[in-house]
Image (cartoon, rainbow, N blue to C red):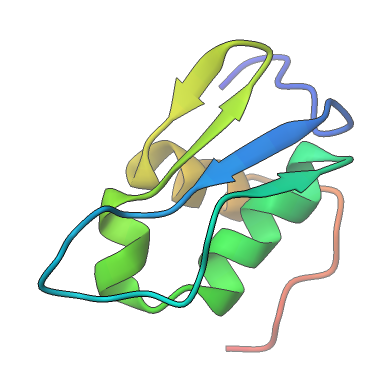
Length: 81
């Protein structure tokens, strides 16, 4: 993910999996870094698998979300494992 803009606005679209009902609904974030953090740290795994984040008209699936979160360029403090 070269030159990803963590400061760009982002939208989180949760999984539509009917087998894993979710209270999490569509959300907008002022920064992509915050959307990524919310997705990785707050969404249960089954919901993260079907969720995606849209940044600058680009969709990021769960693998890309995780890769950005684990990137050394990720700007926010991560939750302790």
